[in-house]
Length: 295
Image (cartoon, rainbow, N blue to C red; front, top):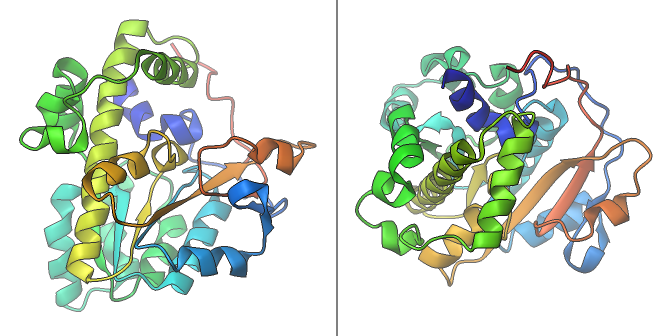
């Protein structure tokens, strides 16, 4: 069960890869926008500035993605920022820490980052530093909540208001099978289908909570908000943007997928059909075989 919980935090973005990864090259760095248009970074930023909420995806152990996120946050200057990696229980303490003169770059050690299982704080610190002055919201769901979703369903784990985010309605059968297949593949085809079903419910709970967190960040900051999360949660079709459309249909939301491109792959072909408003390619992080020794 511990292994499953650990993988749940990383599965859609890393396949449970080791966080001890080598720094990949910035190349290839092609950016694709709506209709497959090739854009410059400045053009993408200009488009993102028109959105009330910007969702920035990542492969968790890819340092280039974090460097780009920090750069985008610095350019967008959001008034609020939410993180998948920050527990919601830490949010109030972070506000106190900052009010007492704590530096954004020191938030990680203050909340026990090194015990959470995420990649090294040094990769995320620049994102927090770039969000100087923004309200910082935590989207991370407690393990007890994840367990409740896996055992009893996302709606029960969410509690009051589950209907407002659509958790009271079952997923389309084809979509559920698609996500289950992703979960099983991410666990090296060792995960039983029944367990994958529980993890789908946990995924739905997390997406809904992340949506709440970025809305809260925007409300508290009174302006544009950014969400930092894995690519799986940044998907426009069934990730956080889909939940935001339910609870805030009039709010402009744009999503950026930070996607690793396989050597020799054609970026234009790879970008076609990906469920993001914008796709920004990078090289692949070198990581150990995630399935080696998976039992």
